[in-house]
Image 1 (tube, one colour):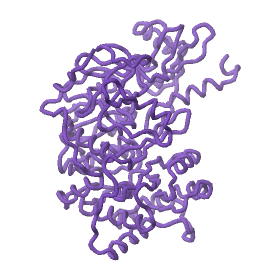
Image 2 (spheres, one colour):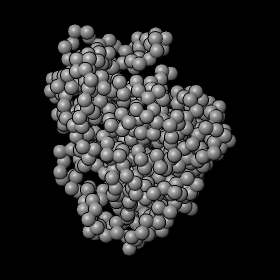
Image 3 (tube, helix red, strand yellow):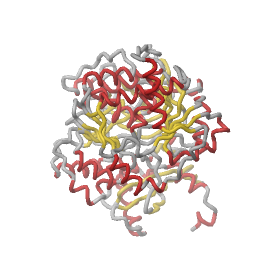
Image 4 (cartoon, rainbow, N blue to C red):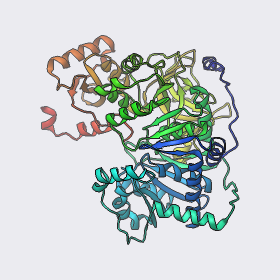
Length: 577
């Protein structure tokens, strides 16, 4: 059985074990503010804030929460896009030992009810445009106070005026007489007043780094998302590991398009940068044009995103104008990166001055985010890379739990210092996911199927739940999608299984063509023939449906469950057509 860690030799000069500072995330921010007081911490729509200024804003926010009764173990919902108040409130709650409950601001009312109820939150912080949603459900879920921030908070005066004229006027006003509401400006003023009253503040650590302090939510497909309880130590270990891998340093920059309510954005783009003296460029809303404009303006040291982001950039003519001479790292995660997309993106940025390539990573919110990354200069097609320093990965038989030999196909299991404490108020799901093995370690059972080669490179094959049985043969939709996307006519593909009278299931592929056309029977036949040449017969799609767009989740993954639901609810007449 595999016992050695061959991947450790792939990280040149990087130790396999390292010490993480005995600090909470707020204490890490305080260290950064002391060491890099006048260095830029972030840029938001052209406005800059230094580490010293950020620390002041965080302390004011913490004092305001404290003055209003928020203390250790309390929970506050932060339903915010990438705006300064999201960062400030996150570290302020950590200072108090309270839980920062990170939620998507576009969550449905049912999801928000679930988030507020399961965490027992009495306070929420959101932007003005989402005030009506929170106000409507407040009485039902026992929400008592809503702090309202605005996109224009922390903008320079000229930028505030410009925002008010262009976008601000389209956002409905928040009633001034609502007793539940306090504006961010007034909330911070409360904090400043409280600090003045206290005089010289004496900080006392409310909780330990290993205590829970952050709730992120899983990307639920059929059930409501599970609350994932994480610690300061989880985030700090990830930050140190990624510092070692990327070489991120003071004055480097990260373009933070990934949302702060997701582990990828919060853990890598924000906290890792903050621990390193680098600065992040907050992008509150995504469009390919907006992202490209930021690339041109700031020429960041690091970029990170999901495959749909990189696909969108390649499809935008303006992308050819972006200079990449200063780029030190580009990382893809959140979904499978096809070899063809990687090749095309690498070719594009190399032609524009880049000396790096797009590297793939693998991770789950249950371990904050990345637990494996492709090492520099050693990318392997269709591999998600090797375990990051501090983490271990193995492949086990999904039935017996026994570790498999290299090349064996089974469930991916992960262990290391970024593992969650568990699922909030769900002991059964926690016990099924976090299991102690014979080696005495607790391993996270990911529910993903994959293999590992003798060099420690991990290959993702698909979700266990997404495995499709065709005539008793296991078919992984991801493999079919990769073959389809390797065809020059195809941009993206999604494959689902449908009930079949003779085969148990048959495959249907939804295809987005590269040239944006609507497809034809001839192209469908060509793609089926292509699959026949590259796949076993059971993995060849029975039908191909051309689409002008494919549904995506809020973090950019293709929402295959929507396509499944669409097909399974079709009438007999629609199926016959």
